Every structure is written in structure tokens, then in C-alpha cells.
Length: 172
Length: 136
Image (tube, rainbow over all chains, first blue to last red; front, top):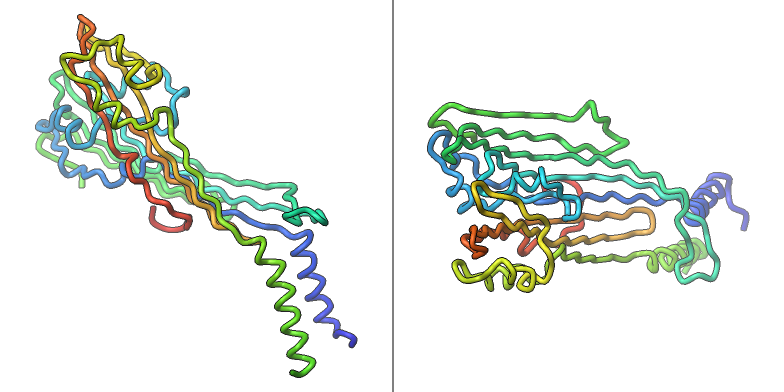
């Protein structure tokens, strides 16, 4: 039986999709997601001490596995440091793959020509500054929106920063 | 069964049999730097453990050692966990990785004895997730 033209076109597109078609991967990586849940309301400028912070939040940690740690970074982790940075990092990637057939292979297609767009940002940053006595003197919180490229451009991203250095105040 | 229905069923079977082998998921686990970090940290006894024993307890050299004024040292160990779950279809794949990294600081006094240990536990019990959109 002879197929009509639209059906032939449809079958052709389906064949192209299956044998030469593209696949896409959406992936997200979040590092130290717990940082977003830290309650900054408990950090009161002029009252909270470095030991209070260590007891409730633990030491700050890097967002990359070690080997990349520089001594200057490490100093921000020790109890005597004047600045603690708690960072949650987020990366979003959209990948598009063109595939080609390999007849007879267990998986009949092999990916070719990958196109990958990624956006990797310190999505949530919490910075505590201490005075010489180990008491909090400033709290800052910054959020950066992570976007899906190529659908959104970097110029679309929302950035928000809050900070306070007034005694008796905290960030909500 | 009419010819039309038979043809639709045949196409469904053929397309389904092409798609089915392409469905799949992969799960990956990556432990970062130290195996069983909490057990190892528990073996460090404040006031007893000496600096020379730390490498054997943790099974590795520290990520770094930093001076703590005036005369102490901080041995910094970092450790963590990472879980990736990918759900794949022939044309669309979703993947999410949850990574948690913690640090442990072992403060050693001028005599080489451990004075204080602080560590994070946020890399414990990370969830397995595959959906990359929305929320966390």
C-alpha cells in the first residue's frame, strides 16, 4: 500500500531521529546544598562567637575536592580565621548529542558531536567576619541565580546581596 | 483486526522495541578523599593523640596544615560524598549530582598533642535524585 506524502515525511523524520537524531541531557550538580538551609537568624552581630558558629554549623568546607586547595584558602577554615565562607555551588548543563548508527553493536548508536552549555556559579554564599575576640562583626549573604544555557543568557540572572554590620542585628 | 489497526500495532511494537533497550539509568557514588571519615575522627582522642599518629588514623596525609598563631598547627582534612543518578531515554536524559564536602580541623598544640577537633557532618546521608529542574 502506498503511503501519502505527509506519512512519508513523518516516517522519514522518525528515521532520521532514530538513526541520526539528537539526544539531550539535562544535568545539575549541587555541592554543599546544606548551606542554603543554615539559619542566619541565629547569627547576631556583636553577640555570636566563632565557637557558637563552629558548634552549630561546623567548620566551613571547600566546594571542590582537595588537591585544589591552596594554603590561602585553607586559612579560611581554621578556628582562628577572621573570615568564614560557607558556599553552595551549583552547575547546570544542557548537552545535545548527534548520534550515528552502528549496526550490530549492543547499543546501536554512538554519540558524536556533543554540544554542551554549562553555567557554574556559587549559588549561595554566606560570609561571616569576626573581630579580634572572635565575635561576629559582619554577616553577608549572596545568592546568584544559575541559568539553563543556551535557553537563558547570563545577563538574565538574578543576583541578590544582603549584609549587616549593626550590633544586635541578624539576617533573615 | 483491520489492516489499519494491525499496521499501527506493528509500528508500535517496532518503535517500542527500538526504544526499550535505550531506556536505562545509571547511579554513581564517589567518596571523596577519606573512607569512613566519622569512624576515623572518633579515634582521635583530645589530649592523648599525637600529631605523628594522625596520618595513620586518617589513612592519608592532610589536605593541608596551617599555622595557628601563636604556636599551634591546624591539620585540615576534607572528605565528602557524591551521588549521581541519571535516568536516560533515547532522546532525553536527566541527571542530578548531589555532592557534600566537609572539613575536619585537628588543632595540635606546641607539644604535638591534639588539643581540639572540629568536623562537619553535612556530607552524611545525601539524597539520590535524578530530576534536575526546580528547587534544589
